[in-house]
Amino acid sequence: MAGLKSEIQDQSLTGLFNAIRFQLAGIAIAFMAGSVNYAFVLFADTIGHEIALSVPILAAALFTMVWGDATLQSQVANIKDASSKTKETNAYKYISVQPYGLLRVMNFSLAVALAASQLSILFT
Image (cartoon, rainbow, N blue to C red; front, side, top):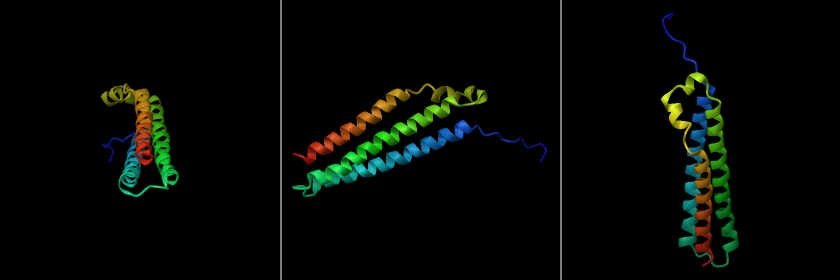
């Protein structure tokens, strides 16, 4: 037992992996909500129910924006909190230079574009 090395976990890495897991869960939820919304607006008789069906469309867009932004900011915070030993790894060097600002804009743009598409289908 004396020859075993004790593994020291960097809390920032644990937080980063949790943020990534939460982001993947949010993507799955947003995908399912968007799919259901598209199914309703494309295949259901929506005449007279436009306002009621706008609520889940806007809710899915808001969820996508808030959840995506929160998880991306959490990832950035955990990257900034990395220990000096973690900062020396190739993985850190690759992850830390990702364009998180651009990813936040893309997340927002995608949510708005999908909601606009669903609303335009619904009201035409």
